[in-house]
Length: 153
Image (cartoon, rainbow, N blue to C red; front, side, top):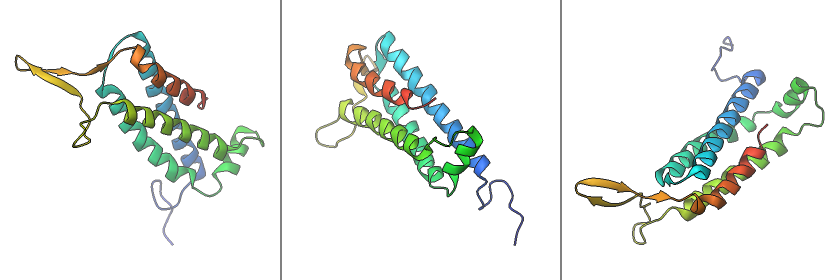
C-alpha cells in the first residue's frame, strides 16, 4: 500500500470540505459581482456568458466532491450542528446555479440557423460593437442571482 499523499486517490474529508467551501465562496463572489454590475447599468452580453461558463465548471467540481462518502456527517461534526444537511444545502445551491444558467441560455441572443450566441452586433469602421444588456433587461437575472447568493452563507 502506498502513502496517501495530498492530491492522491484517497480523499481526506477535511480537504474535500475545504474545497467545497472555497468553490461555494467563489460562486457567491462572482454572483454578487455580476448582480451588482448589472444593477448599476448596462453590461456586455458576454459577461453573463463568462460567469455561466465559470459556474458550470465549478458546479461540475461540486457534483464530484458532494458524492464523497461521509462528507455530510463530517460537516455536521466540524460545524457542531447535527441538523446541518449538507446534501440538501448542496441541492438548493445546485438548483439555483441551474436557474442562472437557464437564464443566460434563454436570454442571450442566438443565431436562428447555427444556434451560436450572437455577442457582437456588427463591425463599425473596423471596430467590433459588443452587444449589451441594459439593467432593466437583467432584472430577472438578478432575481436568479439573488436566489443563488441566498443559498451560500
